[in-house]
Length: 477
Figure 1 (cartoon, rainbow, N blue to C red):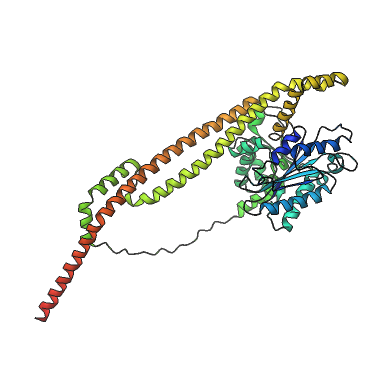
Figure 2 (cartoon, one colour; figure 1 turned 120 degrees about the horizontal axis):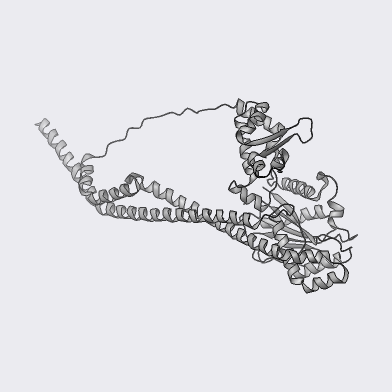
């Protein structure tokens, strides 16, 4: 399904354009489209700057960056480029330079658009024209609505009931994956209360039993708020969280509906017909022959049963199961490695930001010539500071950056998980290899013994035929 994100660029605009224009991601530049700027990233950044130079120069935002992602396998890169161009035409109305690039380096096709924050006609900023007024009039809301409208027109899937969810930054999303976020803990606790409640009044009464503090005022616009009791214990000044902040599933009317569903729910157990199937017993002569000559197979089977508790008949299904487990563990390990890598990068960025912040604060306190001189002397440090700040903004909301100690704690958690998964993978792989080797030995022995068993079967049939002929002959005589 199509999802859209919008965020500002306050530094390293050229670097951002170079990233989205990467030939390895855009099929060697084939999936790039521009408007009123060069297709060369460096020149495009200069083109943007030339238009901004006509403005007041007071705004720190250089450009805006939005991403539109599509469901895997739902759209071709060429069609995604057409959708992106149409979206830019409707959203930017031909008034802003933009650089559009479709990326095909992931499992899902997605497009990046970086557009100048300064209008080409009156040189006013994007915020001045498009990001004012109520929530419904804000730029991001307009972009999301336009994206959904276009996707429906092109018969592409969109997120159903987006009001029931709430967007997350990378840090909160990563904590949610492991249930480490306080929001996740609060939601789970509320879910437990909902499932055990008879009605909404009962829900309010039982919240305390599950460690949830609740404030309910039906006469107020913001009628419902929650907080974990452990949060209050750790920080007496902690504030309640609005139900709307947790998402639509936790607002008053939705909770009432959920409780009604649990109370009125019915369980259904389907009936199944059981049919007994008689299996024809194997020929006794052949079975006896196999049993007498099957010492090697019996020895292998005995070792398998003793070591792994597996019956020989279950050997092939077990091998298939182990293969699937091994592949699944490999995928989990790759995901964890990527998270560990990202967290190490985040920790490095936090350290750099903390180191460079005094330089930036000093720069902001200066004016006039002193400010210009200080900027020239510390140009490299200020550039690195803005780059670190932009990276942290992609992780956290409203510049509320997490502490290094907390990031180290989460990093240690993921490293521990990675070590555990790698050990599980090695154990499953070793078992898989041993069982495959045992199966190979059994198959080789059976191939060697099969001709003899076939000869025994033929001999048995011949003896039966002779016996029947003899009985018929005796009857005739």
